[in-house]
Amino acid sequence: MKLYSGPLSLFSAKVRIALEEKGLEHELVQVGWSRVAAYQPHHPDVVALHPKRQVPVLVDGDVVVCDSTLICEYLEERHPAPALFPTGVVERARCRTQEWTADEVWFPHLWTLIAARVYGSGSEDEVPDAVRALQAHVRELERGLGTRDYFCGPFTVADIGSFVFLSTAIALGCPLPDDAPRVAAWCGRVAARRAVALVMQDVNAAAARLLQ
Image 1 (cartoon, helix red, strand yellow):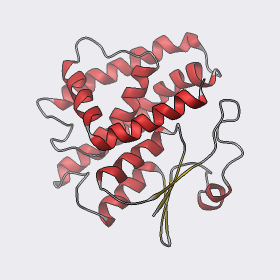
Image 2 (tube, one colour; image 1 turned 45 degrees about the horizontal axis):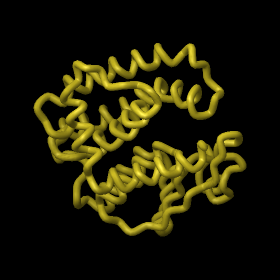
Image 3 (cartoon, helix red, strand yellow; image 1 turned 30 degrees about the vertical axis):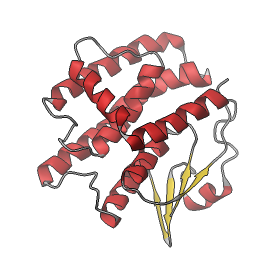
């Protein structure tokens, strides 16, 4: 099994955490990145494998899977234990909805912070609105967590995607609101997991190296 990943790709980080949680041996291929050119020129394997020329890309024998969500679903079906999706239909839908929300609703606001504070291509004037939007989503997550340790009770892909994006937002200057103590405790629990710590430490080390 081989994963084409970007050193600073948060979507790749999601898949890497899933692979580590499941204890799956894999070859990690980190494609090139620079602050000026980002991921261009694209890795030739990624160009050949992915119509959108993006990471992550998983190659498992003759099977090629693109997109972090699809890869996580493939891994769950191919290697169901330990589970990263709930067992019930309703809870699986809830899990998928939160993972989708992190990808499609949270990430555009996070990208505003990344564009302004990592690439320097965005406007700092847009950051306050993005921070307010992200903090509003944190409050929604606070209500969604309820008394659960993780979003669906057991640890799932909903926690992985949400944490990867939220922890990055925090690092880029979006503090957790004071009225989200459950989210703060959840962040601590997720960050303490071996797989999460391993991958995020690697991402943070790459950021320190590439963004200096």
